[in-house]
Image 1 (cartoon, helix red, strand yellow):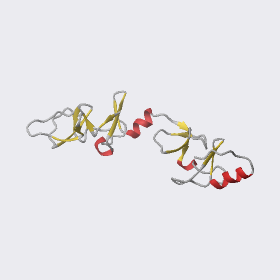
Image 2 (spheres, helix red, strand yellow):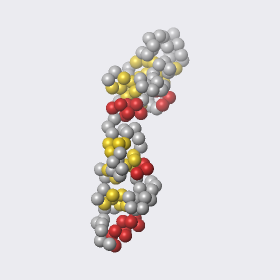
Image 3 (cartoon, one colour):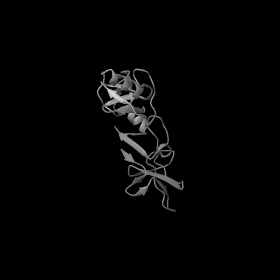
Image 4 (tube, helix red, strand yellow):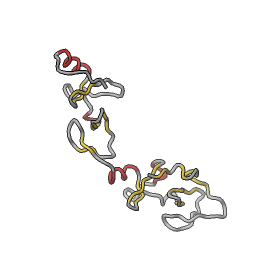
Length: 156
């Protein structure tokens, strides 16, 4: 992973000094623009530093680029190609590496699957939930199970 914001203390977006034009690592032409990018110890036109998969301009999509197998990639494509995937603990379907997830202990969930598995109540950030036998439970269902002697306490 290479950080574009700073490379050896040099900001990613640099103002080119007058009279001393740099060569672009992407197109091999002189950079005549006032602004240029510095990444991977090379200089680039803003239009030349692109993701090898989706062609997005990396200077516009964030401050990080990724390299692997001689490819320069944006975060999304790097994760899509080389990231690890897993299965949702609730539905057992595959979770792509670039998808947002919820975690509870060692379990990973799709955002839509992170709900009480008895009443389907969805949780918001900060809501209290309980995890018992890899089941996510809302407080009401958990307390009902406690009264029946079904669950032991594992508060998250």
